[in-house]
Figure 1: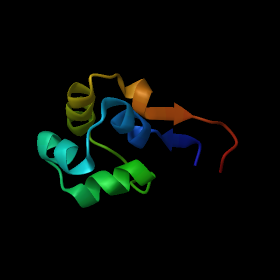
Figure 2 (figure 1 turned 90 degrees about the vertical axis):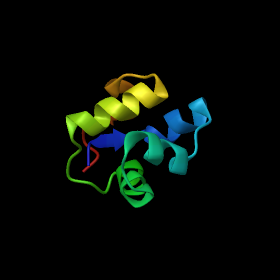
Figure 3 (figure 1 turned 135 degrees about the vertical axis):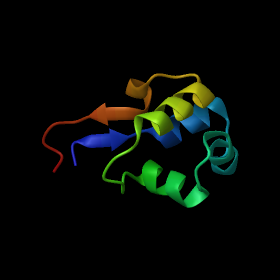
Length: 70
C-alpha cells in the first residue's frame, strides 16, 4: 500500500505509550495497534484529530505517501 503510517515514530518522539495514547484518544489499544501497523481500511477524521492533538502534530506527520509500494 502506498500510504505508510508513521504513528509509531511520532509516539516514540513524544515518548508516549500506546495504552496512554489509546486512553487519551478514546479507542482501544488493539485498534491503535491496527492503525499503527496500517491494517485498517480507514480512519475517522475525529480520531485523527484527537491523535494529532495528543501528539501535538499534523496528519502529515503520521501518514506518508510512497508511490509504487503496492
